[in-house]
Length: 496
Image 1 (cartoon, rainbow, N blue to C red):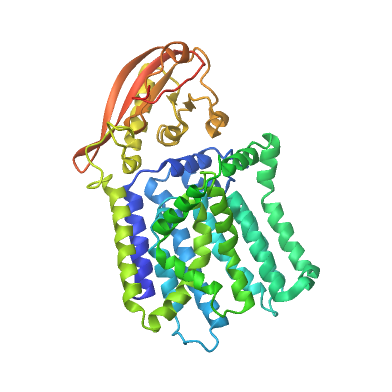
Image 2: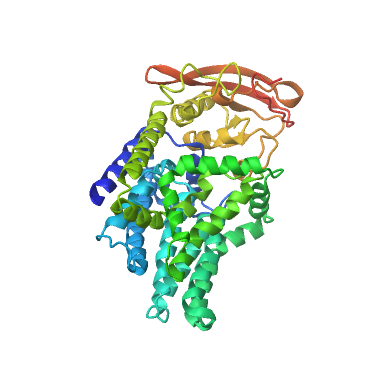
């Protein structure tokens, strides 16, 4: 397949799905960053909000907002293609020669057949940005490993900008710094520390991330504290690590594993050092997964860094006759991508059917329902609030707040559970005695809070069923609630 055709197909797929699906919980949360411009935020640095701010100011529709991650995915793919070609030319040596474009094609195909990478290409997450900047950093580092480039200021300046923007994307960007440092030390030795342009790059990078430091200083370092606790998780268990590794193979695909061949093949030392862009973050996140907190998409930048090496190894394996094995894996991963994206589009059909309730033994949950119906629910909540003379919307779990916060704008959203999050900074707690429109969603249903740990009274105003392919996949209930007690104790529906 031609590389241009592959990129056109992938981008077309992202565009169609991006125009057909509502915002996910994380996407809506980061879109709200753009609706509330600030130096930084409780759970992440600000670039994911800043990148969308011009479009949000223009009230762009969802399909336009999703052009941002789609373009970032395309940029990542082009960078991966170029990096695979460059790395192959650096350490091909006397091994089997590859035609121009082979390594790059297989690298992009590996990226395109990783199911979770498509999710990041449709929805803008901090990881979408960090994936792009990680591969960009690898290219700049490879430039600076060349003797003729190390004395020029422009590559160093670009390195500093890339490090700073990566740091504004996600805190785990710091894990790329050891990889950059080791690569430069391997290429130039300790004398690189005497290069004045190195210190310029570091200064630029630090300067660019100062908004995060400033915001945290002004807010009692709450973001750093939250991330430290979130990353540590609970009690460490080997079984959690094993589960993490299995999930990683499933969501990124076994084609990626060919990149590990770079660890044992006779690559030159500088090229082998580039593998640290994968090894350092992946190893740390694998260890942290033992505490039960590591999420699958956290490792996306690490896998993107491995992709060029996978492209080189796959191209060689293909030319050496292992075509049936590779072709079989390509087919399996293609079907897995099609199945995952198809389930998102259909709301779970035909795998998940006949369920509109939360995840318990009597009404299994439908994770694909999460992408449908929130726009209509937000508009209905806004209309009902105006009719009832109420000035806010409330939910009982923070994961329900993002979509309503986005689609019910400009109404503030109060989260009734007793847990500090970004919505406490934006809207604060619902004051004692306060009135609001309470919204409940069947896929994460709660009992209506009344009495000492709820409202004095709640009246059901309306229900809204969300349909996909002629079947109901979830439902919303809207209540006019008055006289909030200020003492929340949310209880899931059906849980005693």
